[in-house]
Image (cartoon, rainbow, N blue to C red):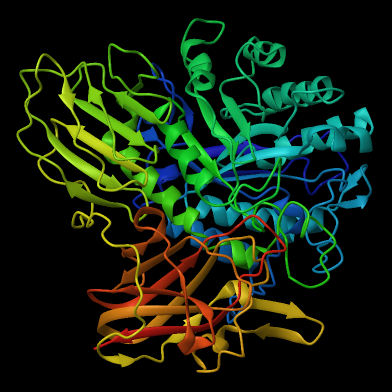
Amino acid sequence: SWNYEVFCSNTEDTGLHGQKGTLTAEAYTGDNPLLSHGRLRGSADRDNLTYGDGTPFFWLGDTNWQAPNYVSLTRCNYPGCYCSSQFRHEVDDRLAKGFTVYQTYFDSAESDGGGQLGVNPEPSMWSIRHKLPDTKVFTEKYDKMFDYLAEKGMVIALGFGVHAMTIDAMDKEDLERISRYLTARYAAYPVIWITAQEITGEPQFGPWVRTAEITRRGDGYRHPQSAHMFPMKIDNEYAQKLNGMGWHGFYTLQNGHGAAIAQKSTYRGFWDTGGPDGRPKPFVEAEANYEDVYCGGFNGYEASRISAWKAALCGCGGFTYGVTGVWANCWSTFGDTGWMGTFSPEPWYMGLSKPGSFEAGYMAAFMKAAGFEALIPRFDDGAWSDFNEQKVLASTEDGSVAAAYFYNNDLSTGTIKGLDDSLRYRGFWFDPLTGKYIPAGRNIKPQKGAYALPQKPNTGDWAFLLSSRILSAPGPTEAMPAHPGNTEFRTTDFPGSLQKPVITSLGSAIYGAEGLRDTAPALTDGDILTEWLPFAPEATQTIVCDLRQKKALTGINIIFGDGSFDPHIRIMGSVDGKSQTVLQDTKTAGKGMFKNNKYGERYVFSRSLNGKYRYVTVLVFGSGDRNTPKSIAELELWAK
């Protein structure tokens, strides 16, 4: 039992002053990790964060900048959804995929320019702009959002604004006042303070450092505290200044956008540099290559997955994923005056189920199974491997476990060193696209501490787990994929019958002045003059075909519209709509589209398919070119 009494400087406020009560704490028996294991803290001896009882915590974040201001708690425009909460829809999706962190900030000055301005107006956080918060908005919206995250066991990585935009728009006194207020209001929540987005520049650095100091003084729980950075290496003057500040407990790195993958040396600098007390200082990759966004170029799809894997095996305590529409809170395809069409080509509901969000969860599951908290990044150290920049290794100090990732575009791997000759290991390939393992050897005996890995299953990116501690795959398994054969398919005739599946294609669910319009029915209407047209042809598109029951697939034909380019296509099959198997992938088996008279000299993608599945997912990957057509006249799916 805990007794409390409230003292208020305004003694006439009887709603506060003199209030007394008793709280009774009872043992928790549920499965919320934040209650069963405790709030986050820095690890005592490793470069990562842990729960309060020392249980390892792997940071898998989703970027939702400005969410308190602009994400709706009471409306949802996801096509066909009646949940009435965009916020809960997004959070529930991320929880189902294994995300553990909700990364956001308040647009305290309401000056950032993002969100769905003018389309889905949300109430202001101010009753007097920059002077007096509207407590009703906090009570009825923001508190409920943070309550939901806490109830679901998701950590809130919270900032109070963004680089110079907030600083330029608010007086010093106003900024410090709202910083005190937000600290006081949310310090009792499962928060990690990230101060603000991108503080490491001028004129914002000094003012944001002062707010961080305010937060440290006002947070009696001593939550982990950091500051979100611009892209930089450890020798940058701002990184050095942050490292010397007493409130700064870990780095929230940003290695930027534009499809460039951070170098090992960047992460090594932070790994090798401890805090002022000489102890290791954790770091996470908090912003790298959002999926399908424009920022320093068009990121596309694969850079996000590669960045996640490389960061995790280069010592990061986790990774924050970001995706078009969701990170920027773009509401609709119609009338949006925020970041739609500039940074993000699609709204939130199109971005929510991009393939990268599934793949980020697969990566996190692998790292947990490998025992990420004990892995040491080996960078380019020849004593541990002969890997190059596109081959990444981390292993335990005693050499009992090694985890590797390869994103080179050939089949080569390399040799892992520093193993224990007295141990016997099991090897597993891990498919980053499906989250499944492929057994790759048992009773493996190193020779002089070294093991030469087998070739990759195909030319795509793969992870490899070598462990002396496990007897079987730590997750679902799949068969070894067939090596690419003849990539020139010249037939469009397959055994069985033409199917009429139920089609879902959020990328073509477009809101306009007349309401919601979707061209997905054109995919199976038998008329090549009607076409499926995605809203953003440069972005990855997902088409899900539901056959209503398992059927033996035989083939697929995709007849493209006039002028469409030759895209990268992946076909995936699923029995339950969750676990996926790659059936065809043009990145590893060649594109091979051809023109066919049967379809009026249109380009056709034709492939044979095998296996019994209910769901067939077609991924059409982006070109990065907003002006390149990407229309489909017909999608023919054949099965017995």
